[in-house]
Amino acid sequence: MTTDPFALALDLARRAARVGEVPIGAVITCNGRVIAKAHNMREHKQNAIYHAEVLAIMRACKKLKSWRLDNCEMYVTLEPCPMCRGAITNARIKKVYYGAKSDSDLNWTTPYENLENAESQKLLRDFFKSARQ
Amino acid sequence: MTTDPFALALDLARRAARVGEVPIGAVITCNGRVIAKAHNMREHKQNAIYHAEVLAIMRACKKLKSWRLDNCEMYVTLEPCPMCRGAITNARIKKVYYGAKSDSDLNWTTPYENLENAESQKLLRDFFKSARQ
Image (cartoon, rainbow over all chains, first blue to last red; front, side, top):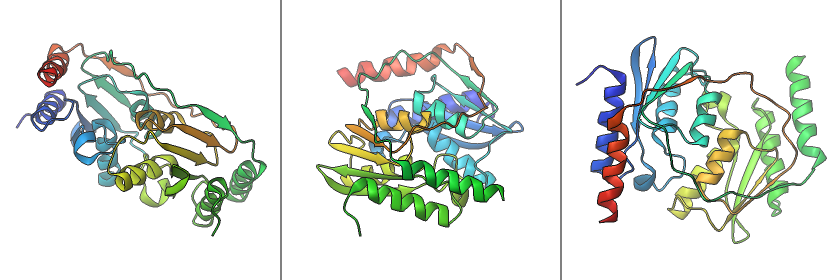
């Protein structure tokens, strides 16, 4: 068993390929120690969210009992997609090392419509006002 | 119980506020029928991924036993963050209706470093080559 986090991410990517998943692996370290690892599981779980990076973040949060991963670094075999980059930012991950640029472009863009609903923002304003008090 | 999906999303946002979560709710419909709903659960679960939209997508995928939600629409009380927008795209959601523009900007950007590792891309190339055969 390797202890180099990037080599471990590559091992996970190979494992993904063996089970028919797109070969991407991710490892999260905290103060240099591996605390979470995952490979892509989208097909097996039929779940659009289950990219290696998101699964690794979920596991790291569980392990540290915190949604903040400020002392953590991620090693991932491929440049993360926009969802995963957002997840990495939301989790405050300190740094990401990736193996290669991604050249895949998704041809799909979901259209968005703003309903301009006053209640939506009032709920947020009231919540943060009472949180500050 | 309301059957208007956006009103239902607002109910979920109110429920989130009552339990101390930032009040955001999301509902997914498939051919006009509600198939998944969620509110933000980041604090309770201490999980950076558990935004209302991501939880709703995970539940909808489970319900439909598919990562593709092409016939689904999302109703969400606030404009989704970059992670959730990426998740919505990855799940091929047909359309998103949101209640209000988000004015929150995250002050954190994770730095990325490309390790330019040849094996990472070879794994992907080999995988897609054998998948095409």
